[in-house]
Image (tube, rainbow, N blue to C red; front, side):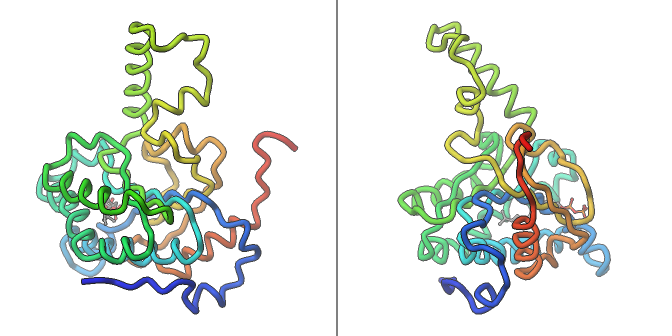
Length: 252
Ligand code: FPP
């Protein structure tokens, strides 16, 4: 089924974003609260994850409309394997379900799909669905839809350090060359700008091992709203509040 994403929906146009030039280029989201959303309705936790997929579609559309360049979604963390197997299996099927329904709309709207994380450890069907989407969208130059999948920031940093050691041993890297921008080439996010705005839903105020290096100068925005109820208006509210922030990067 092809989902059309109208360019600049009425709602976005009418929203009083202060400055269309000051849209956060990279927005990263910790999508929290699916389980609680379901439990409050007397439903199994997985019902919340399924509802969360609809929110992903809503927010991707809004990000396209608002001209965000990169949207990183924390889909599954390296710590999420601790959950019951049935829930893990369910979550890891969602990228395939999402792409089955929405990939044509993503292609049509110039979205490029990519991932960060230890992709090799996720089930083959998940890898196949994502690789197919990456291939289909590889020439698109609109929104980068970046799924953090089996992602953990400490793992990412250790992975980078191991590669640096290997490259040094193989004389492919001289340690004198290693500075912050060179180090970043070894991270999963190589080639992406750091997030300008981090949103966490679900009323929790922590980073949960998400993009610890990349969030050094990012603006944070939290909401009590649970991910399944996070909507276009709330996303736009986050963008508007971002526009009020004065970013100083350590200067004055
Ligand atoms: C956290 O909520 C959510 C997750 C660990 C899974 C996130 C996955 C989705 C939103 C669906 C992914 C969709 C696509 C298209 C890839 P929680 O279960 O920890 O909520 P709780 O804090 O209320 O228990």
